[in-house]
Image 1: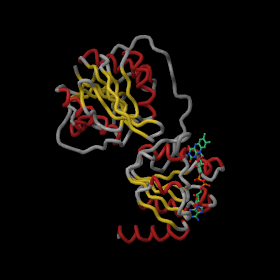
Image 2: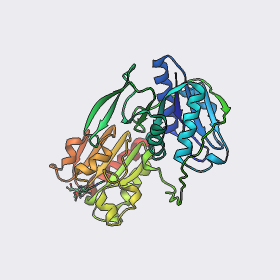
Image 3: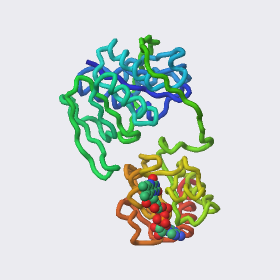
Length: 320
Ligand SMILES: Cc1cc2nc3c(=O)[nH]c(=O)nc-3n(C[C@H](O)[C@H](O)[C@H](O)COP(=O)(O)OP(=O)(O)OC[C@H]3O[C@@H](n4cnc5c(N)ncnc54)[C@H](O)[C@@H]3O)c2cc1C
């Protein structure tokens, strides 16, 4: 029995998601009285031994032609084989775009109990019990599985990460992946010079209340000061005021930042579906009856064009 964790890297570099997955796996393994083994793919630029700071004692790096391009079937087959080599029966995956593509395939290959949208560390490991969000994060349910193989997919940034001490042993592994379907990346549209929304710890978001694209400069300035990503409601991207990559909600990206500042957004249920996992929500809206205030931790009733410059000035003063 051991815990296998998919350690995603982006062009050889690890991000906070990777560390969070490593720590989730290490803590789960500790509860089970076993070890967690990380698996990462392709040539690395970062030193994988640093994953020891998040509790891993061993990282298997798989290289070669099979792993130069993203293919969820090959990755799943490789994870399964690493598990077979190490007696692994529990898999931890961060719910990133790639993680969400790998986990269901892995579940079919290993006939595993798959639990997605997990928001906390397991409450018990025999049977494995975890809390997950349901109905677009309007509720939570505790799930248990006593399946022989188990896969936990947690929502990125839901459990957080703390750096500790330690160094992991990094070994170059080899696996047999067999004959699997071929999937390939046909096009990559890279958002340059911005904090990608799925990994942003802070997000400044604008809605139709911003009146027009020409007014986004003030939100971008505030976002820059806060090291935040920028997001928007669906109508804003539908009207072409902002790119679709910024659209959050039920039909857009689901995000989970530490801080979400919503400016001139009414708080429709479809918008909340993508942002209500945010740890702190600040709503700025001129209408005191706007539904978003019910979901807010802090609310400012006021005109965005009045409030945002004052907030920006206050942040500048604070930072100075
Ligand atoms: C199937 C389906 C899926 C959908 N998916 C999504 C989704 O993924 N994401 C999403 O966002 N929406 C989604 N929607 C649309 C959603 O229902 C709402 O229509 C949308 O979120 C409203 O966007 P908004 O809040 O920007 O605009 P509005 O509803 O027009 O709200 C504008 C807000 O700005 C405030 N305001 C106006 N002027 C100012 C000012 N000067 N200062 C401060 N506040 C001001 C107003 O009081 C108002 O609350 C979906 C709808 C459907 C039917």
